[in-house]
Image 1 (cartoon, rainbow over the protein chains, first blue to last red):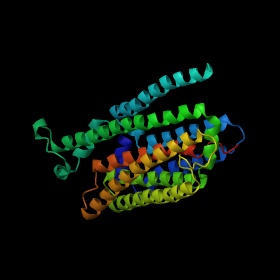
Image 2: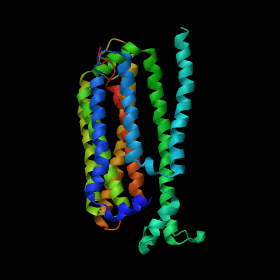
Image 3: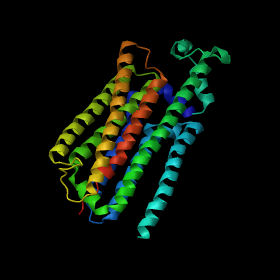
Image 4: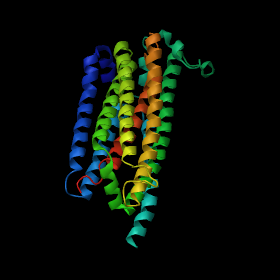
Length: 104
Length: 234
């Protein structure tokens, strides 16, 4: 808040790039890591690593690029709602699918 | 940033704010700066509601994939091995980079300080989006040549591999449509900002477009391990 008000007057294009470039670098590193991890001979662990890295990338994009980090409470609730309903969708459906597979 | 802060920030030195408002909102009896700050809040809130609905739309597709993959793990691994990981990885890198330029454009416009930087970043974002579609086009051509379209002449012997490629075609085309809409919206901002010096400054349309663009990127972030990484170690 006050920090942002200060940076508003002294903000330079360089500072703007630096604030975002490290996120881009981290995203590229994560992409390289997930590509490499897919070739590890560990089967299911590779899949888990792939989707775990996708989650980490999404967190970076959402918090920094989409500015959820600085968003109002209302916006954060809406963003969480999407995930919450999707979680219900996944939990109920997969409970059915997985229990059928286990009892086959 | 709380609304009071936003309102205080906006009230400080923008007497020309009326010109940027969608409606005068005179009924509410607020000053223009407050009304404008509320409209910006409303724009961000509205696009996030839309994005949450998009999460559910793509979530349902992803769930279908998950259920089919759990039931047909070997066929999905064999099918995943057939997609071109070079095109897939290149396109992921292109989209992640486009999100960087989009974020910089949005933040620069939000500060209202760097019009040229905003314009260049918007243009770069649109170009990266087009580059993604070009790469995807080459990939589609290769997929068709390899008979990876479900149907009578499908290349793989396992029948459930067709489910994988049914999903592949459906979801990549839906994603490409989303991206094309994004390119059109970003190009529109760039053209209007280039014509009108004051258009981009603090305009909520930039933030709304940027948020949509990032969501399309996030969808691809999940499609990457779903479509390109299965079966690579086998």
